[in-house]
Length: 220
Image 1 (cartoon, one colour):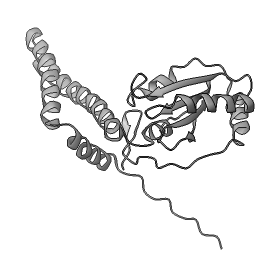
Image 2 (cartoon, one colour):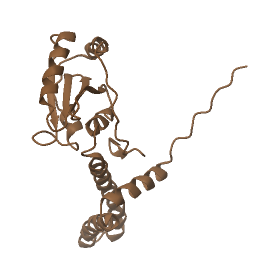
Image 3 (cartoon, one colour):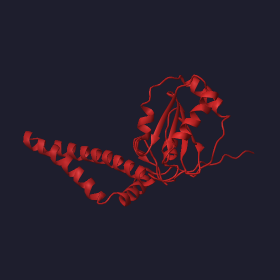
Image 4 (cartoon, helix red, strand yellow):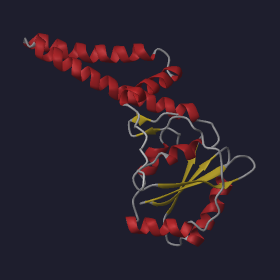
């Protein structure tokens, strides 16, 4: 007789919201006051229009709902920024951000690493191969990894990104990767991934702070 294991319950939205607020409040001072001000300003503008045209009740309801939506949206952006800021500067922070990419992106952390904790992470997607350098001076590692990847995946576009001074920020990393021009079809992406599996992999500690996915921030 077979037994079907029961899947664990998904986290309730209000529990996730409470955890996200608690984390963000530690990173952002006077968070509740900022959110209250956003709600009050949004409500006041819409309700004021309602008073001016003689539709106070209708625009009062509209202002309340719109205020909640605007406040929730801005809170999501604040929480997202706080989550990234909490891991910025940690070893493997870029890998943690890249691992949160969804929808046809495949990340391999630390395909190259040296004794000074410079490292290179690899992302494979529609743009081709993206090598992301992290650390004080990852330039030599990037060049080394480019040569290795050209041998294993000749003809595949290779992009280079640097995280930190002179490059992209942790906060903008996902957006920068997604904006790269698409060159491969999905089937070609799969083929490139298989070819690159033969390259050596390194294990590094990945920061375990909450990472946003879309507008949500997952729990730690």
